[in-house]
Amino acid sequence: MTAHSLAKQDESPAVFQVIPCKAALGAEIRGIDLKSIDEATFKSIHDTWLNHVLLVFRGQSMTADDLVTLIKRFGVPVSSSNLHQRNLEERTANQLFNLPPEVTVVTNVKENGRAVGILGDGEIVWHSDFSFKEAPTAARMLVAMEVPPQERGGSTFFLNGYAAYDALPDEFKKRIAGKTIKQGNTVDTAMKLRPGASLADDVRTTAGPSHPIISTHPETGCNSIFLGRRHGAYVNGCTMEESEALLYELWALCTQPRFCYEHRWARGDVVVWDNRCTVHRRDPFDPELRRVLYAAQVEGHRPFEAPDALRLPAHPRAAL
Image (tube, rainbow, N blue to C red):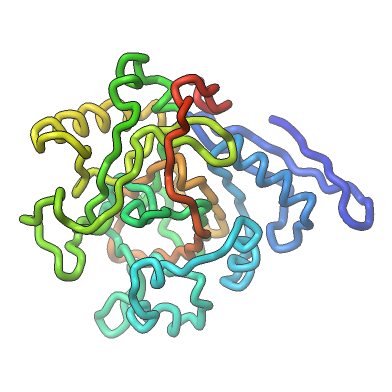
């Protein structure tokens, strides 16, 4: 456990505790009200976030407007409706709860039998957010407004891409160096087909960007594995059989429990993770129970592999 002491504008100290999670990534931050932090405090939080990949703040009382204010500190906010090129009218929760466009509602709540938000109550498979875009998002944040009891399911699992990369054998790292994966945009993370897509589509010819398997972080300068999402992926330059074999091996090596942190949600939780070096998934939960999370994210960069990637130092949370 560590403590950070900073001077506010009135010079009185702002102290918060950093308790690393007993997992491959993550830290809980205590002693902070996210609605009232100054710039110096945020800078220290941001540095801590880069070091721990994921931060958890419990017992917060954030509104949607508070979420927008906070996410703007991380960068330029972008609505998922814009990323999906959909209209806000399709996200009726924004009207139902009178929310700003920067906020997306992840919920199983229905109005007149129709879903008002996204992702329902089923399983959400491993993915990084918006990996089907040329520039996936960077910081991603969820605020728990209403959640079922922890024992009723709905945990979210986060995987440390730094640790997964660091644990790979050197020969495997050399094998994947310079290789890219095409991220075909055919299904969403609930495994539902995108409009106009078909499971019979050839991933080699579908729309979607290509991202390096070894991804160098623009701020930490360390490497992580960029998995994106499994379905609709293709390793460029390979036959389909070669691609599937390499992807199977890569996912099996990287999605081991030792690289993961499980978050069991409670009302008032705020979780912010670095989408550039993680993937995450969600367990299903009881559909009879309401679950409402507010989500926001900021613009990211186009993933790249540094020319000297194989010689770069490991991230502080890479060692297990």
